[in-house]
Structure formats: structure tokens, C-alpha cells
Image (cartoon, rainbow, N blue to C red; front, side, top):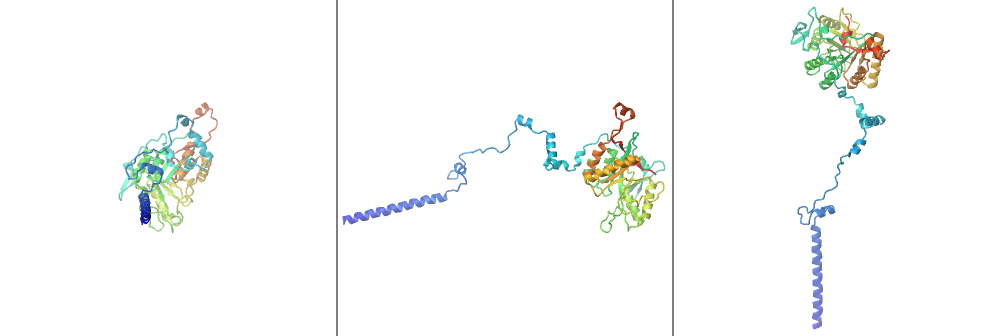
Length: 390
């Protein structure tokens, strides 16, 4: 009997110990399960099990590039070396950026002085329908009074450059105005914003100012030159009114630059009447039309000239340089050349470089003193009013 009780006591103790062990294991696993999951040992170090504030602050290595030592700065490649490296690798970022035509590269031209007349003279304007139309008073003509004569040394060929269709982008116009020599003439689009202000700024920098006169588009069934261009379907009175709106800006303008378009038998009669109107007002006409339709109109004593080189449609650097080479040859053959171009940055920059390549105008004595026997590029830049004739 006593032996049986002992066996039962031993069995009870074993069961009790087993249950206690199982309870302990259950508590341990429950504790582990409720513990936060740390992403790294650093997280475990920084935070205790009670989710308190960090116990430690760990400073990781600084990934910012350390300041270069004077020795490294001294041995760094110079701008010239970088430019040379860019030229060797045409696909580098420096090489690509250097090829982007940026008008900011023009800088400020030297020797620009305001023209005498920034505002129109009272004796050379008449008011009509809210416009100040230019006119001649019988003694003075706007194209002469508002222009500027430039003296050219013997043996130099005269070159006139007109930047047409200017002003649609005032920011670009301002850079061109400041960056090109005063002898370059400007012709503004009739649709340019703040037109009067832009013309006044151009004259303040010494540039002769003109207005674009737009002919009907050659592809007039698909495109339109706008409400200030000549129209093939409008009456003579309507086309005259459009011309008056173009030349009626309240700023001195010496005349018009006729842009490419239709000028043939379909509108020859009206064109002749409009050209006579310009002549009566003392204005000049520069013909930049890509055919001879306008040149064939016979207007007695109209002050006019035909552009020899017109840069339009193709504005690639290669095409522009080819046109400038043609201009040089024409100037050597005729003693003069007129270039009319759009204000495209690539063309303007090429023109600027080309103009800077002209040989300086020296007298015979100066050439002899400097031992110069031949003039490499005998070209002299002049305002376009210097190359017109009646």
C-alpha cells in the first residue's frame, strides 16, 4: 500500500514538472513573438525592448566629397585642357553644350552710339486714323534723315546686313541689339509685341530701323501671312490700309523690307501702287523676294535695292557659311553686297564671327607702317541705307 502511494506521488511530480516545463516554453515563445522585428543589429543596439529612446548615437561615414587639397586643385585640368578634351571627344557634355547656338555668347558690341532721332520728327509724320505715318516735307526724306552715313576707306568693299523678322522674341531681340555692331540694320515684324519700345531700343544702340512688309504666302491655300500682310483677295484700299498699319509705328522708320511671297501678274498692279505710295512718303524699299517679280516693277525714283543673299528656310551652320562665302565673292566682284536674314541664333552667331573676321580699315600710310602689303578681307560693314539708289 505504501509502495503504491509512493509510485503515485512520483508520477504526480513528473506530470507537474512536465506541465511547468511546457508553461515555461510557452511563455518564452510568446515573449519572442511579441518582440519587435529589427532590420539590423544597429536597430537592436539603438532601441531597447521597451521601445524607449535611442541609447546610442551612431555616426555613419560622410559620403560628401571632401574638400580637395591645394595639391589636387593645382593639378586639376585647366579650362583650356577641358576644351581640348571636349574637342577630342565630340560626344562629351562640354562638346555638346559648346555647339548649342546661344545668343548670350554675343556679349556687347563695341562703340555703339544712339542715332540722333529716337522719336519721329514732327515735320516727317502725319496723323491718320490714329497712326503716325511717315512723310517727306519736300526737303527731308525719312530714309535719309533716320539713316546714318558711314565712311569707307578706299579698296574696301561695302557689306550691308539686315536682320529681318525681328522682335517676335523680345529677349532674343535684346541680345541681338546689344551684341551686333551698330552698322547692322534691323527690320521688325509687324506682329512683334511692344513694337515701339523695341524699335526705340534698337535706335538707342545705333541700328537703323525698318519694317517687314509681308507679301501673300506662296502657299496661300494652306498658309496665311496674317492680317497685316498683303492679300491677293483684298481690295487696293484694304491693302493700302494694311501697309499704313505696318509703317505707322510711332517710331522713326526708314522704309520697308519686302519679304518673300507672291509678286507676279496676279498682284503687280496693286504692288506698283503701294510702291508709289512708299516713294511719295520718302521711304526706301529693300527687295528680299526670292524672285524678280518685285524688281520688274518700274517705279520712277523709288529708292530701292535688291538683296544679293537671303538666308531663309535652311539655317544650318554649313549652309550659312556657304552663303557668307557667296557674299564675299559678290562683294569682291561688285564692290558691295546686301544680306537679309532671319534672326536665327545659329545664323546670327555665324554672322557675328564673320563680321569680326573683316580686316581693319587702315590708310595706306598705316598699312605701310605695319608692313601690310595685302588686305586679307577687304570688307566694311555699313547700314543698308548706304547701298540704295533711286
